[in-house]
View (cartoon, rainbow, N blue to C red):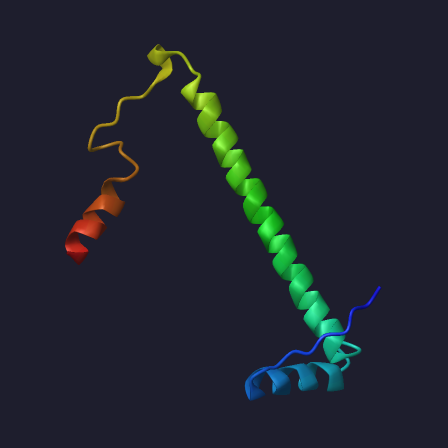
Amino acid sequence: MPVRTTLSFTQRHHDFMTKQVEEGIYATQSALVADAIENLIRQEEEREAALQAMADEIRRRAQAPREQFIEWTDENNPFTRVLEALRQRG
């Protein structure tokens, strides 16, 4: 069921929406906004799923026997480049 609301947009956003409707890409500006929100919802769901998968993998690996652990050295530490970049930034 549609819910009426009032939104404010910058001129740039308004012009874009108007052009999209004029070109027939969207039937109305409301349809464009609804599609944009659906895309944000999908992106958030995908991000949550990815974070959950990472957390599950971390838990799985944490339960692995100690002999399966890989010791990190400077050569195989995945964070070496990141840490170095942070050090250089000061």
